[in-house]
Image (cartoon, rainbow, N blue to C red; front, side, top):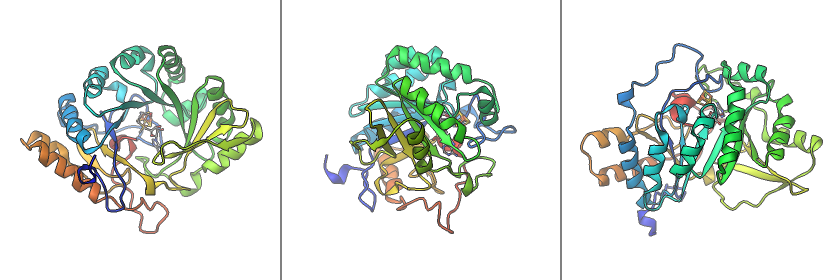
Length: 333
Ligand code: SAM
Ligand code: SF4
């Protein structure tokens, strides 16, 4: 593809990866993401329809977007998600569709998702104990998440990853059990540093449990880890393999080791706003173009503008850092 057709920003980062949030709703209330109560979800008519999402992807695929990830909120609370996946899987140029889910509704939907063309799933799993699950999610449901993981394995997705948000004071006792659980189940475990995107704005820098600290704990308890090959330089995780060859652990360290220089990701919120960064404080209104009779070229131009405006980095550690007004569930993680 000619460079002029691609989604390139001023730093030369080529955007090929789109995260699509399909809802801001969720069936649990993780404290690092959502408020516990008094949430004003977007009314249904404000969310993009499946047809609108499909049109957006049909416009960006010729611009080089080839990987999609569906997220939310909790994407599996959106009715009939397999129908959307089937539409997206049929678009020329889309070579990978993945999903990030809390796993609660996965047991009942795994087969339909796979049949529709979903290749990979990331399942959030911060703990293996119900008590800690309740403390984090402020709802019950660990047994359902574990059933979802088992179902994902049964139906045979190409890849299943487990994601844990790492929070000092909560995650330390979970690290080794989670790493063992993933290794025994032949799944990759990824630890994600806690980012300032919680709706209640309680994030403190000292709650960030760094990937480096987690790695040391795993090595002490399970065995040495070696850097794994990095086939995709834009991947956010630093992956490690156990030296005995029996599994992989990844670390997503946006706070301690920002990976903005290689970022190739764009986001579309559930109500159709384009974001060029999780931490963006500006959005580009794709829904207005989609619903206002705009042409495909106008939509493509809007995406190009969003990409061109991308900042070099999120600057969490800078004194000028401004938290985005939206919390994680409203952006799409
Ligand atoms: N509901 C789905 C889930 O939990 O997997 C998908 C949406 S969730 C916003 C996507 C990912 O973002 C999850 O892995 C979640 O743990 C992570 N996440 C949410 N808030 C976060 C925060 N403040 N810092 C780091 N990761 C966060
Ligand atoms: Fe829901 Fe996912 Fe946010 Fe947890 S992280 S509240 S599961 S959207």
